[in-house]
Image (cartoon, rainbow, N blue to C red; front, side, top):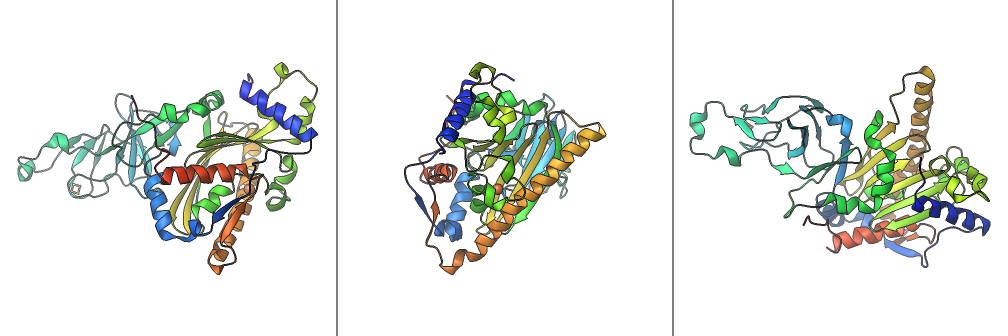
Length: 388
Ligand code: FES
Ligand SMILES: [Fe+2]
């Protein structure tokens, strides 16, 4: 695959830093108050702002490949129904009946021509329009055209389904939002990938603790001593801050092969694990030959949901390919569980008073960038760009 100027720069920086035995560092250690992890009002505000007013990855394009395909998504606390309508347009709705509020579609996924509410069978089209009311005489005078399912902003971009779980005041511009990451995401062809596994966990920890496990590599050779440590250069990474998104490139030891060779001949993918943070809590984690998409969503001050998709470049059909990807999936679950166990342990100690604040070190650039972006969104400084 063609290497981009950004990737050439990352490789150059890694080689230079390895030679100087240093890594990306920020000028200051940052103090993060522990109340940010323990205050119920704080998490309520985070849910209201971060998980309502920004796009959340809810699926893969193949989940709604054909007109009539649908899936539901509830992890954000907002019941969402995602459909592909008869024109092929991707749509998302509040999965809430306009009669008296029942959950319209109960299944996780499927194929339908219409959606019929289980309570009194009001029926909606794939486009959300109200199509039928049984015994309509009882609703004479109501304006049916105003009683379609409430539509949410939804987009298919880079092979992923993004939904903003609230109705915005003005149309929002996802392309401007994702622009700094577009070249890289485009190059991955995630839409052409196969969803090999999906994985969802509920953890007893602040969503931020789970998020933070994916924002720095300082912990790799400690928390993942027996698993991921030897696969990467220890605490060596480049963080590109596209505020609020971050590209975090962690090199494999074999990057040294590139030293002294011509940059035009370099390849990027075989030499890196890339953790792309897409604000507020979506990750595209690119391995050398497959990709994990994960999203972290708070459900309370000390609980969260982790959703993960493993994407492979094609559907593995041979025994060998199947074994290979299964082994990778099993390994990543072990590695992630190492993080989650530590996170749940941190949660248990949060209220002891041992720490008034946590320290985000100079190496832990992703933590500092992420925290600043969260603060900016909560302060109203960071918003989704509007269309037009
Ligand atoms: S609540 Fe849906 S039809 Fe009555
Ligand atoms: Fe980790």
